[in-house]
Image (cartoon, rainbow, N blue to C red; front, top):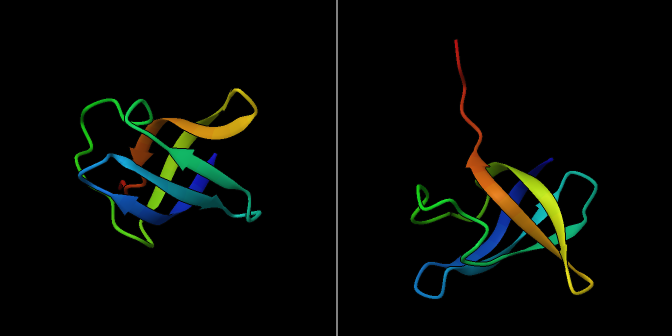
Length: 68
């Protein structure tokens, strides 16, 4: 799935993102594979959707890059 960062707290490692369909997913420390250290509002990401006790969460978060 793809989405856009809505908000992100770099110190806590938590935030939210919105999909193109306006579904909201939580970001937590398990969302990132240790490669990404910070995210900016408006930044595009690709992720895997997961369910964590009824809460929509992002897993395997990756930055959208432009490749040639």
